[in-house]
Length: 138
Ligand SMILES: [Cu+2]
Image 1 (cartoon, rainbow, N blue to C red):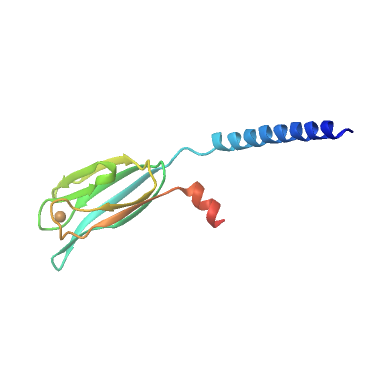
Image 2: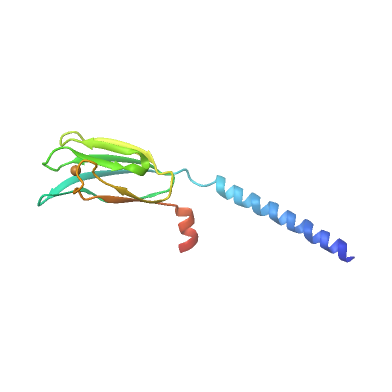
């Protein structure tokens, strides 16, 4: 086999390998499960005068639809619940639980707080890209 022929044969083999690799990758992508819906109740409580939404830390997979039921059990009246990065902003009265939802469409760590009371203890929302995380931890 001449040198030029060997090189073009090798080039052709690389192109075929690249196409097969892409098809395997594309097939894997299309068979992934749809994003889940995460449902969680969160209760505002008051202990010795301190208010806090519990659980305060939410972890959801990237792309998930998040449905939260907000229950305000603090005797001090109306409290707020906001996640500015996802345009969540509402107020909850004692006897009127409120349901809100949003799509966790960007990864990162985002603050949760009560927009009515700066002293109201806040929390955090972690939106994690599980595909990327599995690549790192498995
Ligand atoms: Cu508050």
